[in-house]
Image 1 (cartoon, rainbow, N blue to C red):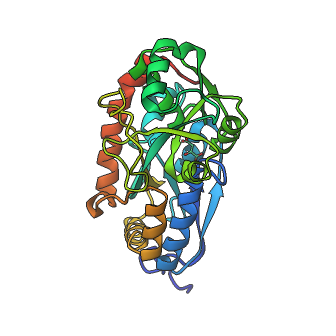
Image 2 (cartoon, rainbow, N blue to C red):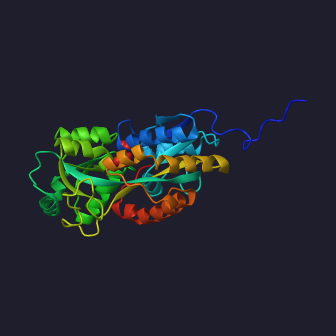
Image 3 (spheres, rainbow, N blue to C red):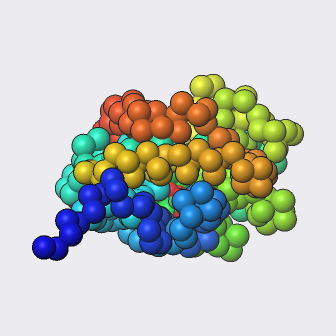
Length: 312
Ligand code: MLT
């Protein structure tokens, strides 16, 4: 008689490398933090975590592929606010963010910065916002596609200012930043994990941060709220997801590896350097992520309806 196969719980998990699917391009802000996190989680899982960039349709292509992946714990997804905006943005979204996944935990929060091309005349955020309110329709702002947080930020900025800035989509954050540095676009709202080196090198002009408070990493930079947009706030939050049906024991192992990674001093130091904030431990949990995703999904729906920008 053949020996019965080991049940999933008896088999050691993980016994082979895992794949962390990143929905945006290599070198972009999501990729930068994913590589750091993947390597750290791998150390705690005793297996390597291979980052795979599956780029397209504002991150929905990657999320759809993970929703359909084998639910064995070996494939998981990192995604940001785009998980909450996609149901309102995409009329034919082929998955349900609040039903088709197991939730591993929240990962990190990243502030955004509003940056402009170097030769933009406005000398500071206050002057820029006043100019945009008066003649924002003559200005354009780049973003990384419908579903990208740079798009979300540009949409919220247009709504807050009440002006019709032209939004210019690029394939990712890197080409959008190149276009800004090349002077082809005026503005970009992007994550500190991506803009910090360019700001420090003086390749772009920094006009403000999108958080409620100033950042420890950029203490002299006022918030946009301080400079004429009271209440304006955009923070990029990230979560880890596995396909629905992934065994609970695997999800627990991944959550534990996430929490351990976020305690590694070198990881913490690097994330702080990039302006990112590690969420409280009760958010680095399945319930912490699921509840937050539900809240964000309901918050964004009406805002996107009002903005009237959709994709099929
Ligand atoms: C990226 O990694 O390219 C970004 O997260 C894109 C974005 O959402 O702006």
